[in-house]
Image (cartoon, rainbow over all chains, first blue to last red; front, top):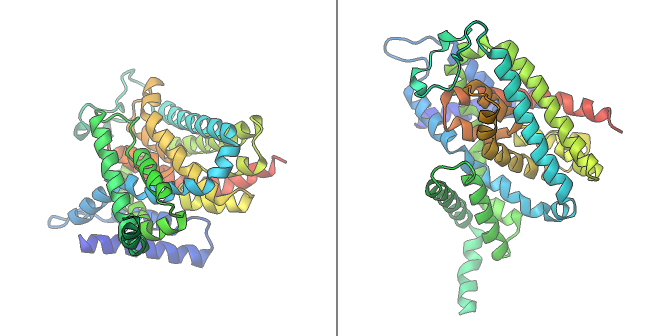
Length: 140
Length: 239
């Protein structure tokens, strides 16, 4: 678990260095994520060692499963913007809900329409009752 | 009596321990509330926890700066957690490659829609230009949103708040609404959460399904890139 955490932090550091060296507008952790994904996707499974070590997978699962917790400190920042929120609550509320709902719907629908299997009418890509049975190969 | 509480409180409030405990406890309470509500998405643990912490912080007369000094250790873990999204992404790399065109199309339309409707709705309802510009980059992951907001003339702190609130809205309504629109594909759910709902909604999908997690990770990363380029361009069109 410590090794897995080291890998994650080290990738974040690499991302941070790349960001500063290239002057990119993307945060270090996001660059680190793409770097690590690239390396892991490129590695091949071996008999004695899977491409993605179990410890790394478990640590990632724990962190992702409780990512909500990590947003709380930033979310509490709402108290320092109370004045502006009170003064313009209506445009903020409508803009926030409206743009989020529209963005979700447009992204989801475009993705759905463009990935729909063309020949069969049944949707092979539907959320399976049991995600373990999901077969990527059945997609068009 | 009051005096002795003060004696106990002053040194406690100065250590990070107190606000770490409050934040973690708030999250545990949030999870318990969600369980009590039968796992309903309306009882978002993040929302419950934020409300709880805000009440405690305000009731004790603590400044946000003092609270964050303690809670920053939790905030720090956001970095490694973002990197950790590489694992579901790598596990589904083949599927991502097979859908690159759809991802690009959905990304572009979703990103433009989110920025334009956010700015447009605020402007239509008489909001100030400052607030409209803070709304523009709010759907991307918080650090990018803050940087873009600063660049185009918004209020960075307001954008950070909007990013979290928007993420909570997306986490609460996303799955239900997309099901209503007959979208029943984890790839679409994940990508939509990553693009329109920043990290909070992505975390909600990621906790439920690994394919969703992979596409959410992709959505967060790609939309960060797209919005950093598109938002300044779209804003330039609006004087």
